[in-house]
Image (cartoon, rainbow, N blue to C red; front, side, top):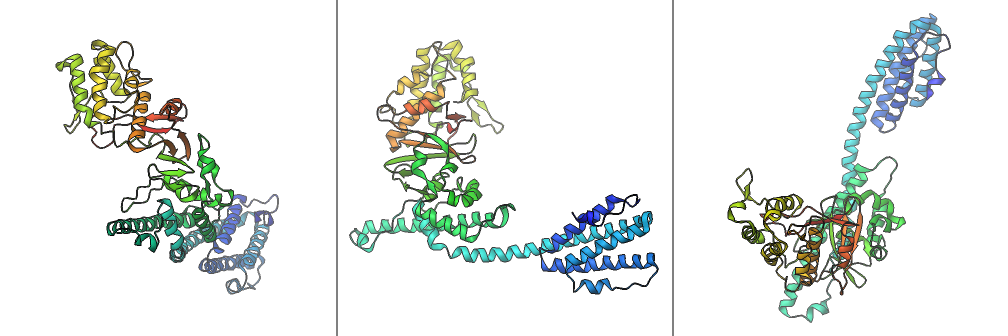
Length: 502
């Protein structure tokens, strides 16, 4: 702070706080002026006016004619020099005038406060104009990366260009199908490019702090290395049962990754032509190596496939087997089972504010509490709960239940000896059924759960001898279920969400 350079002498009664305010204002004005040529010129003129005012005071105090036209001098002198001279002049008149200087110092403070506001407005407007110009330049530059972006988009979805020889060897119907796939791949690549352009635009012009500098060259290298697969080491990542994606990023490209990871990992560009790439999966497939889009499952690393289930916090992915219906498909059977156990008059449906029927006994903790206390505890046995309620209902929902190993055993393990549902185990055993159904129906083996906010992950590994064994071991430890489902939900599959445990 330059304040000490022109601080008034000891025993003076001039308000030091106001002089300190002036010193800080002069520092701020100098900083603002350096940001824009218009601001610099305006600051010069303002400081010149203030110097002219101070010179008039000096002339009055010393009773001599004013000797310098400060306004004219300011137009040709460096602003920093002008400010230094002004500080010396203020210190001089304060020493000469003592207490009488207070009102002049207050006037100077008010003048500088007004000058600050005008400079802020000038710099703000200039930044707006400069941002627009910079963004236009950015768009032009980013569009020149179209080849890299196009290749990245095709890499992310596992598309391989077919040669003329490949096409020639196909039937007419096969060629038509191949061309449709090519068009879809091109559309997806373009959409991914648009998403990345928006992401990097924000990084370069909006989100960066003063301690971060990411250049266009940094972005270009990041995209080029993503195409090579050297940004995320997927092989090391999947070798661990749990971890954080950030820890497997190549340090050479981590500066750019850190700036965009908060939006890259959750990114799911709008998919054209059936390309279905979800959050988490896109980042690993686009930036990582080895990784290929799997025919069944989301990505393939080495010889192993991984289905990605991603979400943030308590929102995760569901086990959406082709052989699992929505909960609505089992609702009537569920109601019938309840009536078989407790009688028609005891089992009623609730209604929401719009009059839509709701079940009182949904497949979640709240619903199970009501089910246990109102129906199963007073009226059921373990055999009735299994044979009249659970087996009939979940045989409707899990269409391949006859092929699911341990289907009845998992249902039975949910039930307490008194016929109530065990809240500690019911969702765990239901998850086991869902996972086995998923594996049989869609060929899903390993599943990776990703929290897109923290970028933590956990892997459920498939074993031929015990399909759901690893899932059962990790549920409640590294992963958990979130929520459940309502029987009148005709949109979501009858599955809880699976998330990283906190």
